[in-house]
Amino acid sequence: EVIVVATKNAGKVKEFEHALRKLGKKTASLLDYPQIPDIIEDGDTFAANARLKAKTAGEALGVPVLADDSGLRVEALNGEPGVYSARYAGEGAADSDNNAKLLRQLDLQLANNEKAEIKLLPDGSRLLSKAQFVCALALYDPATGDFVEAEGTVEGMITDKPHGSGGFGYDPLFWLPSLNRGMAELTKEEKQRISHRGDALRQLLPLLEQA
Ligand code: ITT
Figure 1 (spheres, rainbow, N blue to C red):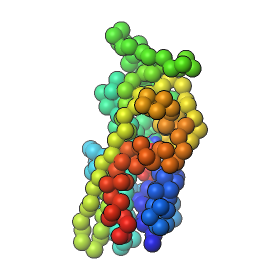
Figure 2: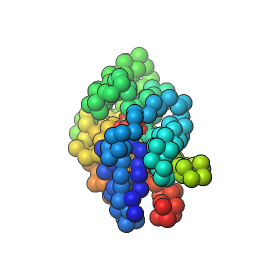
Figure 3: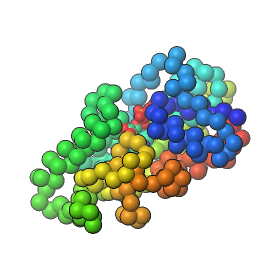
């Protein structure tokens, strides 16, 4: 009936609500359980951090918990910000600060790279680098101590100007050449169909339906 997702990110919560509603499930998040202390995400990989969050919350609540660790890998930045995506501009940074830092870093990087080929969109904005969103999901059952995991990705490009006002995080700077639209220009349903989170979630659907 209710699936607990170990996240405090309101943008993620909305996407899980949208997806799980279709299974007839309600979504609860750590925003509903303020008594659970902040989880220190010190894993080296998205998968390790997802397991950490699912296990911590699952043990605290005594019910199965789903966790999502996700982020952006930018080719011209050698895969940064990666697992540091949420705190790229510092601990507790706002999405707008992280986006500004991303554009600053790409500017610096590209200024030093004469070979960089920059493509333009019809509106004049520049496509600065290939990039990939990654989402690792972990479902932890405290009764058995078992994890079920999935990972999803989506490929795109970083634009130097924001497009759209939907989604959250780095979405306004993430351009989808295959759709000729920005991630923040998609509806929730469209984002779900193509996104890293949608991809990972589809792999767990049969299990979540039974949860
Ligand atoms: P929780 O740990 O509480 O879930 P968080 O925001 O700290 O929340 P992460 O550690 O997984 O979550 O960090 C994810 C980062 O990647 C964060 O900066 C997000 O804005 C960004 N991100 C993840 N999925 C995204 C998406 O679908 N669109 C845009 N940005 C995304």
